[in-house]
Length: 471
Image (cartoon, rainbow, N blue to C red; front, side):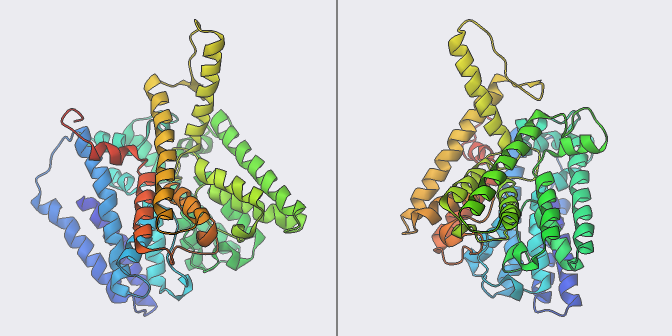
């Protein structure tokens, strides 16, 4: 937990330096926030005795409380600076940032000081690959704590395409993450973005977050080339990092040999075709603009990034329903994407096919494989239970929001968008709107939804209902 505070303190200090350079009003709030983080971080490192081993329950506790305390820390500069940041708004913005949801309560993003904007984007970048991964990077390689924390943070499906131990996997994740960020920053700068905007949007893209430095998101740049680069990096960031690593280093398992990746891209491509065709046939845009806006929006929501180049709330209902599907499906495990994950949808349909074959041939023994890897029965059960809990969570959240007199479209889409860590929904929370006008209680409920989606539900439930038998 001390390391987590220190990590946040480092990014807060960088934000302070930026604010100090531009002589902004956020200079002292960022400095005080950084100092508090360093104090809270060094305190346990000095006064708490170290344990060489921790059990699974302790590892799970570090994961959940690490995320919660990080979100609390993220509020500090917002609250100290003021503006639109009331207590609930600061909490909502902080949770949205760290969970890479990208929902915002800000009506005028461009009025924020650059230091606050950088901190806001930094929360995405810290949360994208997972703050726990950063902590694992600095734990001793021989520490038994590494395995317990790693197993609690990384899902079983995400581990399938990694053929290495926990230490190597952590370095692969961090290496790919950093490489994508640097490469996108360079490309966006070459295409005309100033360096500050390029860094912020790279943080948000590779983290599949969606926070922008502009009020109308990527639409502010009105550049097809910038949109194309961001689309490519959103897609790459939504693919399993182990497979990206395998592609770069010419390993046998890579994005070109993975059936899972091919199917994911095919489904995204199908969505692009359907949405673009509907936009063109309905007279919304000409054929080139239909392809341009349709492609960007489908990839953005399908990877849970949430950037926008058009107001999809004004699109035909057919196109909106396609976008809602991708908001539910999300991208792949092992990526920075949150939510349900495409892998679980893929496994679900393979399970459905298996059950149909079992009915046709009752005595036969069928095994379920994904990319040549046999799935254990317990993984199949976890997938099915997760999908059910995920859908029930959406229904319950929608029900709670409608009890606050929020219209059905807004409530339903906001529930899906927050638990999927996507960001924009429809209605009052559309791609060109924000969450500012929702009641405070609704913002709190949706922020819990974001954490459920980012922590994949099971971790929070397991900790809440933990018992001695669990450990």
